[in-house]
Length: 596
Ligand code: GCB
Image 1 (cartoon, helix red, strand yellow):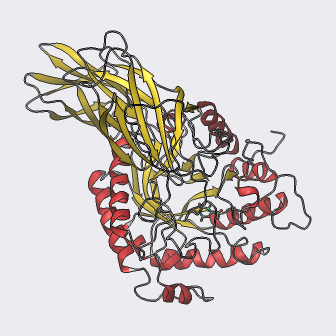
Image 2 (spheres, rainbow, N blue to C red):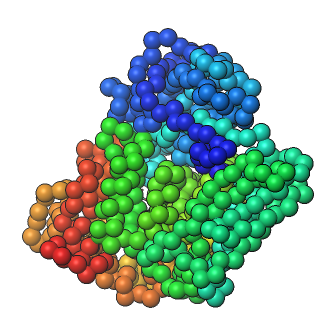
């Protein structure tokens, strides 16, 4: 999927601004053609903390805006693109239903060429933010104990972040030529000092078209027998892409007719390889270690809405602390975040919105289909980013059987046969195969807290493990917790050899709360816990990554383990001020002290 852009042949305008919203608690209204008397709402941004009294509203809301067709677009093909609407969106233009899309965080597009007027267009969305057991991420099963937290949450999520709703990323209106480039897929290899760039292109069907691909002075043609083509460019003495030197090349694809370009699209690409070799993760043939974070798109007032300044701020914080990597926990991040990862040189574990899954409860078929849809949409969206080095199929699905859990929780981590539920194994077998078929070039992972009883790890290339010893377990006893964890990691590695990433570890910390000796929730405790984890992880050669949970404090549902409905495991506060641990981690990761 190509991000809209302005070029010689393409135009794009952003419909962000003040729209109207009508909350439809009783679900009685049909407002396909528009409505009177709504409230004002800023798009993009979640509605929850923006509109007074709507923080916990997760029902139906109708959005509307008006727009005119920009001058000169008539005669082109015209589309509307929603970068992210959470959770389910149904869309109408001038009363004509365009379609619907399920799942927040991934873009969707409708062609509106035949429905758009020159002026006075009314765009209407019905957004459904309800949590339900057959959605992904799922809500609770009615009448059952909360599968993740034991005690009830409000709103009743199965995951540990606030279920913000609404139009959370820009809505773009764009036009392309009648016959246009519709897709580009880039794969890079390294041959000695040359970069080998394979480009596959697709265009709308048409006779007599050829495609030209150019990278800074190197160009090749693929002659168009049909709408799909491929070509390979060799770049001598290529400047490779890496965190130390995020070199990018502009690849321009032109669709030619009668010797002249009728469409042109430019993509920033990076020449790099990513491979698993035994216990190592190799970037451009060299071992690489990931230092970084799990994060959230989360900020006061805007909720999960796109805020470009916050993206810059967070990359600045990650740079300062010596991070080179992050995981898009627990859903795909904005396309702007991904573009900057390419430009700034961050290594990204790109995660689908599958979090808090369960496999015995009703709705499994729907949930599994949605997971597959998300894998397709994510790879389609992000396949050309050099920063994306791995696909994460899910975070913390609840996979083990109760018997396996009981045996594993013993001092020696006893692993019994068939430790995962068969339905979970089947689901991840299929998902892993799908991801590999769609992208054979990148490793895949599954992020789990289950430990060596996670049978679905057999399908992935890299183990990503979340664990909170010294916090949820061995509370108050950091050393005991880290020792036990060290042993557990060895047990996991013996069962699932290969590169291992500690994808979450941390401790909730109230900024300004101090204790000596360190005590849970104090700044000292967080700094000490992270130091001991990092030392232990550094001692194991197969550990290729350490991602602290979390970069910043973030909003959650209400529940007894979340004071003020925040997760306080950030090493920066929600408004991005450093806690003591931020300085400690910076010292450990960069060797620099506060005064440097
Ligand atoms: C986890 C989850 C993450 C939570 C974290 C915590 O394992 O993956 O979403 O926020 O634990 O702090 O409990």
